[in-house]
Amino acid sequence: MNEIHEPIKLIQNIVDAADSLIIIIEGTKPIMMNKALSDFFAVSSFEQYSKDFGSFVNNFIPHNSYFHSGKVEEGETWIEALLKLEEEDRIVSMINSNQEPRAFSVKLDNSHKDYVIVSMRDISASLIKRIMTENHVSIDQNSGAYNKEYFIHTSELLQDGAAFNEKSIGITMINILDSDVQNLAELVANIKANIRQNDMVVKWSRGILLLAYLVDTKENALLFTKKLQAVTQTELMSLALTLVKKGESITNATKRVSSVLPDLEGGELKVL
Image (cartoon, rainbow, N blue to C red):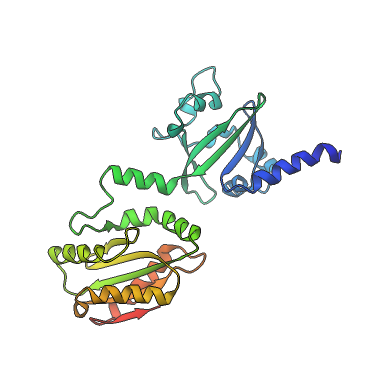
């Protein structure tokens, strides 16, 4: 019996090592899933998934922007329907155990006559970024900075970049004590001229800008922020900075910084 089960265990270990959600299909029936997919649905095993869920295609949210069961023609399987689409159109959306919708790019390997390997890569943040950019809603038109919604919805990409480059994310907030539309636009243009291409300037709220950037240490984040002070009118603004802690969300880090801004005087710089 061990000789029969050992190859299956090896395959399970291989798919469990992948970050993408993977499910192996025989015909139209799932026969194995990896740990990432089990975690997504919050099931302890493939057996529990099989017991608690119906047909796998029913997990796909029925929305016109994504592939779902309603796009499967009579007489064909959902695998066949997906294969008919161009690769860039093979996008599905599913709801995780926290009731959050996530978007996935789907790849299909049907090289084996009996089995299909379905691999789903989370592209939620990338897709939102593309949609918001195409619809010209990524930039605040008055200031020229990114808008808050765009930053929040695409912050996962910044965190992925930080992890890949083994960097921390620095967050600097600037409270402009006496701002109008023209002054804010001039300030944003000045900041953009003095930062790197991948650093982000965000209009957080009226009179408050946020800068997000990759950095090695808090000391370098402080040097970066002091550089901003040197090229701006420091007496008309206060600044606070922090690093996003390991395992912390960017949203939580911004709350920590924004909470101290109202107590700072013009020209003051607070390091958290």
